[in-house]
Length: 341
Image (tube, rainbow, N blue to C red; front, side, top):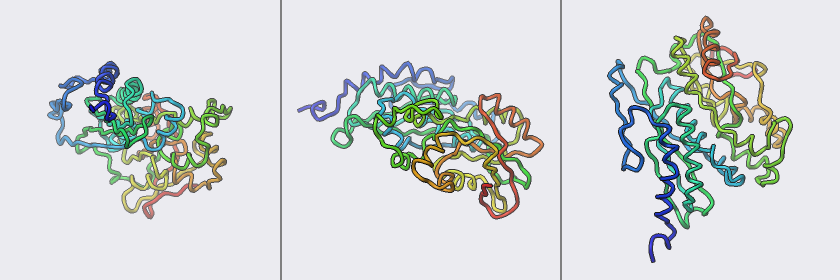
């Protein structure tokens, strides 16, 4: 008996590392002091000397049950973007700059090429956000997980000067709400989606004109990463008073999180286009509108609040970063919460 016969292939692990090296290397920043394969990742904090009160911000998350679609479609090169996005968008939402990222892959069996594809997606997400992929772990769990399946999670660390943290404390009545378009469902609500649509290759490979692609490809579209848009806003001098990453819980859970007591958000549903995939989900699952807005991003992945005088400049800064903005509502006085009209 040896470790390989027990289900853990050490040589496959070595091969995975070799295959992923080129993707990891593309994410490097000048502050990275360690190479791939060490026991830990080292990152220089020399730049914090430039800040008055440097503050670390962090985020951790996984991809969730969206992974089942990747398994069924045998497509693993973009799911890593979702993992990074869920972490770095939260950091950006607080006004932070993501510095580095670490991933964790648990699998039933280590297929080096598949692991390399997953990490390729993680690296792409890191490149989009400017974070360095400085470490990770691939763990085989024979007998605990099916051989063809895996789970993916990650952890990101960022930095912000304390004075620049976005808290929402200075929100005023009349402040403008600007939403940034999502790419689709992103990485939330898939437990419901898996009940709405048949999780079979034939159904997922069906092409729909309104989607412009197959159902499976539309659902697997990776989460937008809004780090560059938030940085563009900061660089342009726009003061973002409050920010909300629209993830699980949709509008009703996430938007109130950006509000202080005594401030209420009003969103006009007709102010931006709701993506066709959400109409398909609602129709196929007979899901009422409020539940859709309480589960999904409905076409807006990030929401910010700015003073009315800065709204147009904010829109320009968001467009300059490659995102699509919409003025979708305003802040009013009232009980903390959100109204959709």
